[in-house]
Image (tube, rainbow, N blue to C red):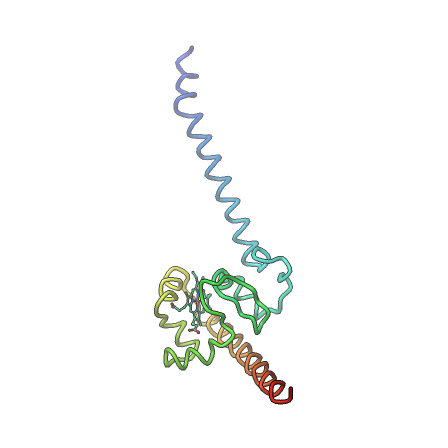
Length: 149
Ligand code: HEC
């Protein structure tokens, strides 16, 4: 075998193959990260969710949280966030915005790697306030229905 082709087989071919694998993987990853950031990746039905709600898909909150009041079905690692707006004040003595700025517990580690911008926190806080209102209304309605029935 001539010297050059042996060298090609032992050094260049594996190097090129490796490079192709790495490039392919990064393209696949890029493709999926773009898909998820559109809110399409997690649940295609939610692709045209209202702009505010999309943030929970975009930032991956749905991997661990349900928000039933906003019709968001997600993971069960963390609590349902429908009542988080009031809970944050009760449990952490901060509003949601403050909690997300200085998170404790699991959320400390979640947000350590995935820092939220001021704008993101604003949208999340507004959405969770909406969720709280909806949840409170549903609760009041239930109490009324129970009294009637
Ligand atoms: C890896 C799972 C995971 C992800 C992803 C995640 N969370 Fe959480 N979150 C938790 C867990 C677990 C808790 C329960 C409290 C604790 O132990 O810190 C929590 C608590 C919270 C709380 C306090 C709720 C309460 O009632 O006490 C808020 C608000 C919150 N998360 C918001 C978010 C937002 C917004 C995102 C997306 C940017 C997010 N979380 C992403 C796991 C997660």
